[in-house]
Length: 141
Image 1 (tube, helix red, strand yellow):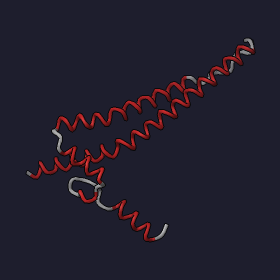
Image 2 (image 1 turned 60 degrees about the vertical axis):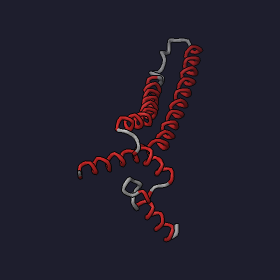
Image 3 (image 1 turned 180 degrees about the vertical axis):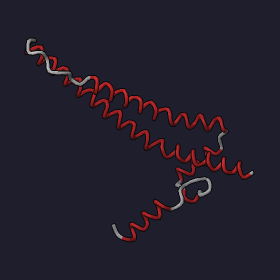
Image 4 (image 1 turned 30 degrees about the horizontal axis):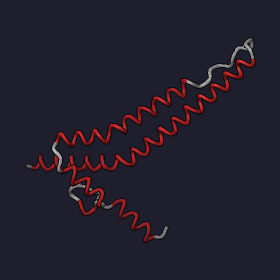
């Protein structure tokens, strides 16, 4: 990275963040979020935040549940040497397939969670900044 590139990156990273007091730092998309959120009543703001946060909470719960199932589904101690070898082999193969399926489901749920975080986190952060700016403005009065 060149010095100029690093300076531009640093200015973008350390410059003013998009907020009601720094609308010039907002992208068109962020500006739309700030303006539409600001136009909402207090009750509607809570509902909008809940609408964006609910899928994140559900995805986190799904990942947590799949992690528990993966741990719970892991094979236990070695089978008794007195049991039928064919039965043991079949059980091991069945358990391996179940574990693979659980691990794939856990990975997919983790990917969905990350996608939701990327899509919702920015809007939730902007909403928090609007709420903070409005609260500060009320205290000044």
